[in-house]
Structure formats: C-alpha cells, structure tokens
Image 1 (cartoon, rainbow, N blue to C red):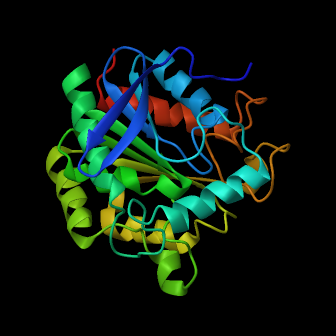
Image 2: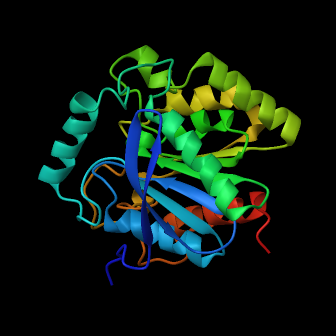
Image 3: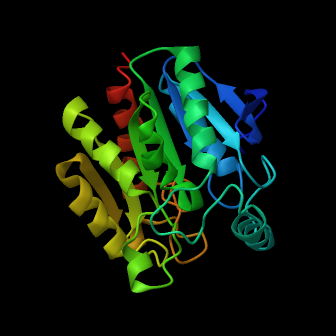
Length: 266
C-alpha cells in the first residue's frame, strides 16, 4: 500500500524569510524528517510512518516538489534543477564550507517541535540534497540526534568538494563541542558506490568527529534490485523492503532505534 499524508496534520510554518507547509503525525518526542529530491514522495512518508509507529512525533516539512507525488525520472530532474538553480535564496548546492539559508528555518522548526512535544530533545534526519542539514541544525540546542542519509551537498564536482561536508567551521565546532560535552553522537548512511557521496566525505566526518560519528556503509548489492541504478537513497528508493533481515532494513531499524535511545522513548 502506498504511504500517504492523509493521517498527518498539515500546518504552515514561518520563520525569517521563509514559509513552508509541514505535516505532523504521532505522539511522543519529535523527529524532523527532511525529504530528499524530488520532494515529499511516498517512500519518504513510509519512513516517517515507521518513525511515528515507534513512538515519536514526526514533522515532515515540504521544501520543494509536490507532496505525495511518486518518484519519476522527469520529476526528479525538474525538482533537482529547481532546488539547485531557482531556489538559491534557500539552498546552497555548491558551497563547500557553509550551510544553506533554509537551515535557519529548520532550526526554528526543531525548536517549535520541541516546545510542542517536550522530551529531552529532537531528532533530525536529512536525505540526499538535505542530508547535511541535520548536522548544521545542531546549533539549535534542542537537536540531540542528527542522522545524515546519503548527504550529497556540495555536489562532488572537484577533489575538494568530494571531501567537503557543506557546513560552516562554526557549525562543525558547535557539533564537536556538543558531542563531547553532552555525550551525543550522529549517524551517517550511504551506499559505498554512490557517486554523490564519496569515500572522502565520510573520511571528513570521521576526522572531524571521531567516535561520535557512526557510519553505516552498505554494499551496492544490498539495494532494492528493482530500483534505478546506481544505489543512492538508503532509507527510501533503494531500501529493499522485501527482505526484512537485509542490510537496508537493518540500517532503517538502527536509525529508528537511535532516535528512540536519544529521545528516551520507553
């Protein structure tokens, strides 16, 4: 059955110069799930449904694309082009050492989610184009559980950008301090052969954050065999839902358990 937004409560959220729709579902501490390209498609919603079913309140912002529209090649390319070139005021697809302006809006959403739901803090998960946003959000004190799934920005168009992580030195310093002083950690996920998330980028996470960075790196053969190649979207398009004991489902389970642990879900 295709996941839909029908069970979610929709509201509009404004902060600074930006306003976007947000979809909320569940009870318990909050997790902000930031969709990938091309938009808030059914497989992102499926993942959010599973987070909600595990005892957490999911906040799904819709930043670009058409909510619930399934992934298709033409839609994917059009959405990527729009986010990269037409929404430059919100997204910095090429910058190696600063986060996108939309991250300020996401920090404000995380604070609202924490105010709404309580608990020890908020989880944040970015995917693909938005993958690094969860790390940059850590300058908001309520964010205590960042997950970066196939973090693809900046686009790896040079040796330097293959290693870059698309956040500012100040954001790196803040995250490092919080990991050390608050006992926090982060998770990063990728397929080993993903051309958008090279070895060098995960090496940077390891160098900057040490043992606080938990890497989940999957062989390409673990991807959904019916999905387009090369494998990329660990928790959505390339998750092999037909194999409950397979590597991608285990990766999904680890992410959900990480949220439950950090947010102290009973």
